[in-house]
Image (cartoon, rainbow over all chains, first blue to last red; front, top):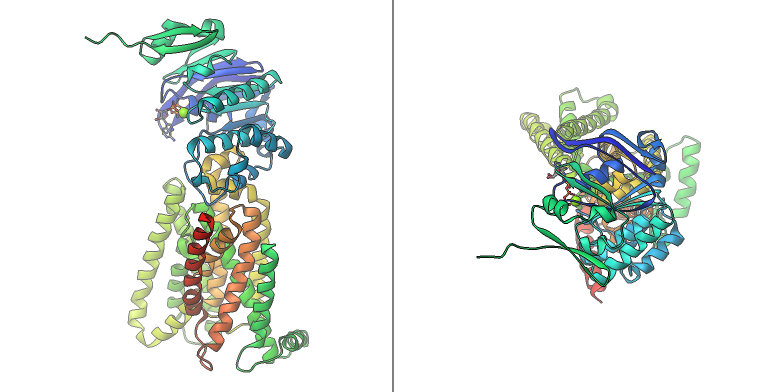
Length: 244
Length: 326
Ligand SMILES: Nc1ncnc2c1ncn2[C@@H]1O[C@H](COP(=O)(O)OP(=O)(O)OP(=O)(O)O)[C@@H](O)[C@H]1O
Ligand SMILES: [Mg+2]
């Protein structure tokens, strides 16, 4: 269980997350919203990586009361990429994490096709490859709450499906998994619930059935959106007004 | 494996340190006599050699660890122990001591102490400025450079007015392992041991710091706080070295790079021990060279270490690159 109560985050004087509250049972949840709406900030706050006001509860325990060295047992934030490129190999990156379960790490390394990259430097792999390595690292922790930031941005179509299937399985095993992304397909074909942020406020918090609503999504992104279904696969696409 | 070879090199350079000097001696003999002289509190050439050899090892290792910590915390491959303004702070303080009457106390007590304090004050100033600028890697590097430049220039004024002593200041700033007694290496060894243990315990934090601040936060730690602790250790190590043996460059910069290149890995777990051993061997070996190239004149080890070390580093970088391409 993940409970978020009246959570706010400010960078300097600018409020980025403005009093967000929700509660999630173990499930796979999509976190969507325009660029700058606060998805990354919200996830980092829940992981205790940025100062916040309000409360975050994991299985009823306040995040602030969890000892720092045990925090990874509760929550993990998986970043989409690394800004600095240190003189490290992908293998170093994966093993730099002492809270990882090595057997599990090996499994994810295989699942995400990272084996042949282990001895490459971080800057010697492609964006998608780095992203897959970061996912392997993050998922190999047995955290109760898994916050995955943009895992679909650099990965190719095949690995997008691999990622979503993995996350689906983790959710079925009882983890709370939140995925921040705007790749509505495949995202919406795997999740149980949709959260949407707009200007730092919770704009949609609904189960999949009601969450995928053309009017709501159009308002969220500021463009006309249409839900299409082909062979039971849902996609939401922008429809541009006919140009004159 | 690499560590084993490195240890072997260190052992050899240590032996060479004992063997070479004004006269060639059997290193094992020197070791035995040196230890006896130390325990019987007598002085002799063997004891002198042994102490100097030990100094080379601990100073080399300390500078290497210090350099590693700075490179990691500032995420700057050019990081070296003096990036925080320490050497200039120490230099400034040392220059001031030349105003004192030239007694043994000034020379052996006041001057090292002044250098230590000067180095640490410079570091604190760097830290203060960096903290106002968010304690990011860049802010530390920039404020370190600002503080360093300031103290360096400030040290030029008194030097200009006490021209008669300028060669002494110059000689001090060249760094040398001579004028040793056992207290100095022991003091440094104690600090080094404490810092090494802490670094090894914090290897996860060091790894995370070398990647990004978010990775540190992800471990539930505050990156700014860790950066302060780790740079403070680097500063204390470097200040002790500067205070006792003057400015010895390059070892701190190069040892971690040697380690990284040869391992092909940046994991703190392996880099820390290997850099320590490399630093110790590098300084020991070059001190041997310093003793013998222009025999019987001894060249300051600082000159040799850069003169020999820089091309070696360059060669290794180029060689590894070619190796990596296959
Ligand atoms: N470190 C920071 N300092 C100041 N402002 C920041 C910082 N990080 C993010 N912001 C601002 O906070 C707002 C929310 O950013 P955030 O990264 O959470 O958005 P996001 O929803 O993840 O966007 P994207 O879809 O582009 O990933 C943006 O307006 C951004 O400019
Ligand atoms: Mg984001």
